[in-house]
Length: 128
Image 1 (cartoon, rainbow, N blue to C red):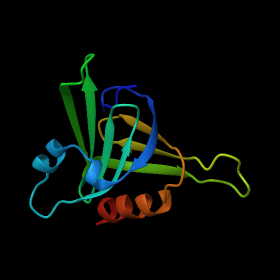
Image 2: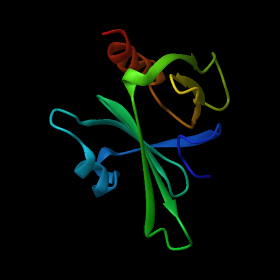
Image 3: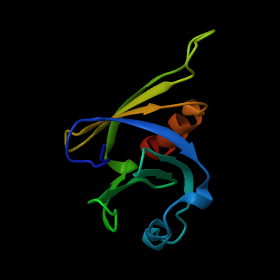
Image 4: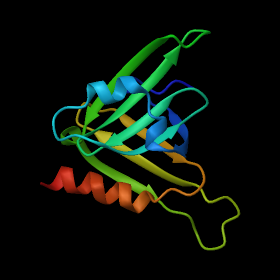
Protein backbone atom coordinates (compact mmCIF):
# COMPACT_ATOMS: atom_id res chain seq x y z
CA UNK A 1 0.00 0.00 0.00
CA UNK A 2 1.33 3.42 -0.93
CA UNK A 3 2.00 5.93 1.80
CA UNK A 4 0.87 9.43 0.90
CA UNK A 5 -1.05 12.30 2.39
CA UNK A 6 -3.70 12.45 -0.33
CA UNK A 7 -6.33 9.97 0.82
CA UNK A 8 -7.48 8.25 3.95
CA UNK A 9 -5.78 4.93 4.37
CA UNK A 10 -4.25 2.79 7.05
CA UNK A 11 -0.55 2.15 7.00
CA UNK A 12 0.79 -1.07 8.57
CA UNK A 13 4.21 0.01 9.77
CA UNK A 14 7.14 -1.96 11.09
CA UNK A 15 10.02 -0.15 12.84
CA UNK A 16 13.36 0.08 11.03
CA UNK A 17 16.77 1.42 12.00
CA UNK A 18 17.40 5.07 11.14
CA UNK A 19 20.41 3.91 9.09
CA UNK A 20 17.91 2.19 6.75
CA UNK A 21 16.15 5.46 5.87
CA UNK A 22 16.51 6.31 2.19
CA UNK A 23 19.36 8.71 1.44
CA UNK A 24 16.98 11.10 -0.31
CA UNK A 25 15.28 11.80 3.03
CA UNK A 26 18.54 13.01 4.57
CA UNK A 27 18.91 15.43 1.64
CA UNK A 28 15.42 16.85 2.38
CA UNK A 29 16.11 17.71 6.03
CA UNK A 30 16.58 21.35 6.94
CA UNK A 31 19.14 22.76 9.39
CA UNK A 32 18.44 21.43 12.87
CA UNK A 33 16.09 18.71 11.63
CA UNK A 34 16.84 15.08 12.32
CA UNK A 35 15.09 11.77 11.80
CA UNK A 36 13.82 10.36 15.11
CA UNK A 37 11.75 7.28 14.15
CA UNK A 38 11.50 5.31 10.92
CA UNK A 39 9.04 2.68 9.76
CA UNK A 40 8.34 0.73 6.60
CA UNK A 41 5.60 -1.11 4.80
CA UNK A 42 6.59 -3.68 2.18
CA UNK A 43 8.43 -1.07 0.04
CA UNK A 44 7.52 2.36 1.37
CA UNK A 45 8.90 4.25 4.36
CA UNK A 46 7.57 6.73 6.89
CA UNK A 47 9.95 8.94 8.85
CA UNK A 48 9.09 11.02 11.91
CA UNK A 49 11.58 13.86 12.26
CA UNK A 50 11.71 16.46 14.99
CA UNK A 51 9.77 18.82 12.66
CA UNK A 52 7.48 16.74 10.39
CA UNK A 53 6.39 13.41 8.99
CA UNK A 54 7.91 12.38 5.65
CA UNK A 55 6.38 9.60 3.54
CA UNK A 56 8.36 7.89 0.79
CA UNK A 57 6.20 6.06 -1.76
CA UNK A 58 8.13 3.78 -4.16
CA UNK A 59 6.23 3.62 -7.43
CA UNK A 60 6.23 1.32 -10.41
CA UNK A 61 7.48 -2.22 -10.75
CA UNK A 62 11.13 -1.36 -10.13
CA UNK A 63 10.56 1.26 -7.43
CA UNK A 64 12.98 3.66 -9.11
CA UNK A 65 10.33 6.34 -9.27
CA UNK A 66 9.65 7.79 -5.82
CA UNK A 67 7.10 10.17 -4.42
CA UNK A 68 7.89 12.17 -1.28
CA UNK A 69 5.22 13.77 0.90
CA UNK A 70 5.85 15.99 3.90
CA UNK A 71 3.42 17.11 6.58
CA UNK A 72 4.77 19.47 9.26
CA UNK A 73 3.64 19.10 12.86
CA UNK A 74 2.47 22.72 12.70
CA UNK A 75 -0.47 21.46 10.58
CA UNK A 76 -1.60 18.88 13.17
CA UNK A 77 -4.96 19.72 14.74
CA UNK A 78 -5.11 16.75 17.11
CA UNK A 79 -4.27 13.08 17.34
CA UNK A 80 -5.35 9.91 19.11
CA UNK A 81 -3.35 6.93 20.31
CA UNK A 82 -4.50 3.41 20.99
CA UNK A 83 -1.96 1.45 22.97
CA UNK A 84 -1.45 -2.24 23.46
CA UNK A 85 -3.60 -3.75 26.18
CA UNK A 86 -2.47 -6.01 28.98
CA UNK A 87 -1.61 -9.53 27.78
CA UNK A 88 -2.36 -8.76 24.12
CA UNK A 89 -1.29 -11.52 21.75
CA UNK A 90 -0.25 -9.03 19.04
CA UNK A 91 1.63 -5.98 20.36
CA UNK A 92 0.20 -3.54 17.81
CA UNK A 93 -0.75 0.07 18.43
CA UNK A 94 -2.55 2.72 16.41
CA UNK A 95 -2.36 6.47 15.91
CA UNK A 96 -4.67 8.80 14.02
CA UNK A 97 -3.56 12.33 13.18
CA UNK A 98 -5.95 15.05 11.96
CA UNK A 99 -4.30 17.78 9.87
CA UNK A 100 -5.60 21.30 9.23
CA UNK A 101 -6.26 20.47 5.55
CA UNK A 102 -8.83 17.86 6.64
CA UNK A 103 -6.64 14.83 5.98
CA UNK A 104 -6.68 12.07 8.58
CA UNK A 105 -3.62 9.80 8.67
CA UNK A 106 -4.24 6.42 10.28
CA UNK A 107 -1.16 4.47 11.29
CA UNK A 108 -1.01 0.90 12.56
CA UNK A 109 2.32 0.12 14.16
CA UNK A 110 3.30 -3.55 14.15
CA UNK A 111 5.54 -4.98 16.83
CA UNK A 112 7.28 -3.01 19.56
CA UNK A 113 6.83 0.70 18.99
CA UNK A 114 6.97 3.32 21.73
CA UNK A 115 3.87 5.09 20.48
CA UNK A 116 3.67 7.19 23.64
CA UNK A 117 7.09 8.66 22.83
CA UNK A 118 5.92 9.52 19.31
CA UNK A 119 2.84 11.16 20.82
CA UNK A 120 4.99 13.20 23.21
CA UNK A 121 7.19 14.36 20.34
CA UNK A 122 4.20 15.46 18.25
CA UNK A 123 2.64 17.17 21.31
CA UNK A 124 5.85 19.10 21.90
CA UNK A 125 5.67 20.66 18.43
CA UNK A 126 1.89 21.11 18.32
CA UNK A 127 1.67 22.81 21.71
CA UNK A 128 4.66 25.14 21.40
